[in-house]
Image (cartoon, rainbow, N blue to C red; front, top):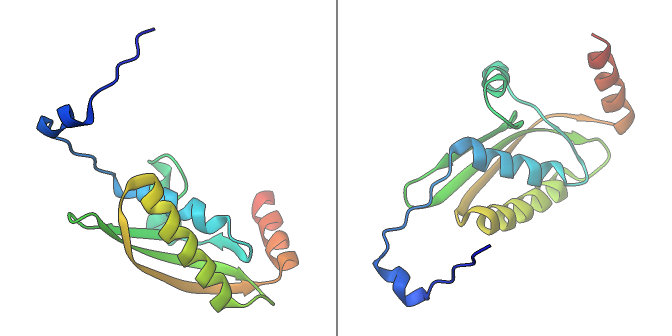
Length: 135
């Protein structure tokens, strides 16, 4: 096995370009938000569901707008847990997304929006998922 090391000064003459498909950035955002306590689900519309059939990863309920200047705006459609503070959940989502996206992609998050589609108790959410699984 050969390991190559390159002098950083030698890389100045290399044309470099790193880009990310919007679906990749949406996947990063979805995973970051889904890990937040109080986010029960990210719900997409019918178009999101159709798009997910043809792509890898679940990005339902997440849309991103990646600009050429390496800035990104993120929007979520979410179901939150009833009884927990929606503003506090949103603040944790914003903090996590604003940390995770730059760490993994180098993109700068300039906007995060969340549209709360529903608030359910954990029991209601578990029951609705159980019913969907039985269909």
